[in-house]
Length: 206
Image 1 (cartoon, rainbow, N blue to C red):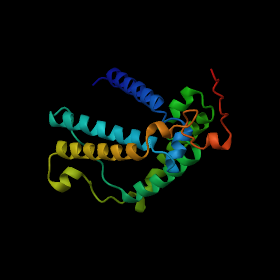
Image 2: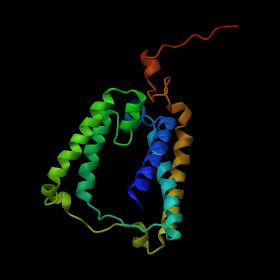
Image 3: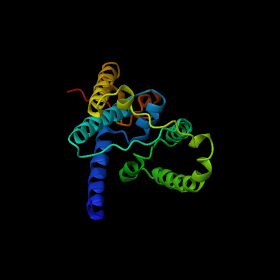
């Protein structure tokens, strides 16, 4: 694959990803913080949908030999510590690495600060990584791959994962309907109207 082709595909995928983020409202800070506080589950629903879709696509591509899997070694310490740091950052900023560009495009000026912080953190990590890899954060337990553990073809495990995601989505939508989880201003803030942050519009009587 040439560099131009790779860049073109990356730009196309970015446009589709950004469009999906905007339409699902997952880029809204209220939705992101609401998910971290377990007040709404819109973000989780979108992510589970993405996982299920990706699993099916990879199952097809891998089954027909178009792609080869290259799983990375499992680093439990790094995954747990990094996940906690990332989660705290998401809760504080109301943004995550996948949504900050969509927020900038939508006009959230504070998202620029979040982007600068994310880039600064990435640069700092690149310098700290050699030292961190020598601690418990760099200890690997080998590759933890589902289909290898159970001795089944990858496409079978991928389809099972997709089915599990769909089942969880059905349950979430049953008890937490999406049309009720979006706030008055489509920002996921369910308490805005009760607090008086969003004025109640009078309905004219005809």
